[in-house]
Amino acid sequence: MKKTGPILATMLVALCVLGAMSPASGNLLQAPEISLEMNGVPVTTLNVAVCSKFTLEFWIRDIPDGWGVVAFDIVITWNHNLIELLEADPVEREGWTSAVSQGPGFAKVKFFTVVENRWIGNATWVLFTFHCLGEGTDLMVLESPGDSILLSNGVDIDPTLPEPCEVTVHQFKAVGGVVVPVDKLAVLSPYLALIGLVGVVTVAVAATRRRKP
Image 1 (cartoon, rainbow, N blue to C red):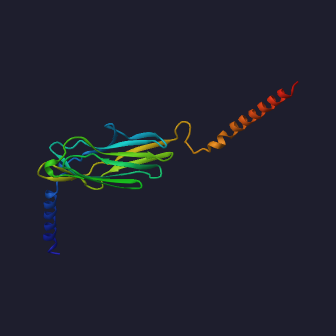
Image 2 (tube, rainbow, N blue to C red):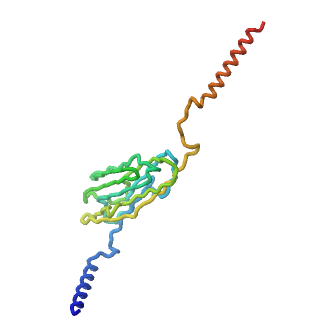
Image 3 (cartoon, rainbow, N blue to C red):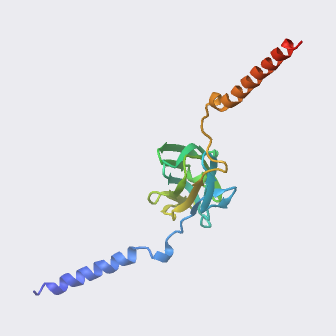
């Protein structure tokens, strides 16, 4: 029991030291903003017709002053029964390397460069082109899996975790309905029959006129 006092005192000192070593929440580096946009305007809701295509731009905005992006890893997901990805087109930037992987309902994009080539301004990085497959409402989610947007001030490199971005896509049938294959012969059959009937009547009238004295 006599040793309890020194042990508690040692633990208290250790906790104080750890607290002093931990960064204050106010000093954490602010993460940039990630968004899905059309023509540079953020999108939260879309209304699109079935069988149509649409393109969303992936942007990184609001990078903290004095810092620049040197690498990032993002993933976008959706319902593959309602939407399919036609193309994920990374924007080419000198000195940057990119990689895209995709599957049913998801696409992952990676970009990285050297510290000297860090990117400091708002910019679009990928163009995603989608095709609507059917009626319904889908939620597309863009996020960074983990602290995977890396920022550098030229010396230090810090990981940041941006807030996810969501876009609700409402898909509806186009006016006039959905185009479906049609048997052309079945459509023309009534008209062909009518033409045949007119021909028979014409021949009969001509024969009757010939018999008259």
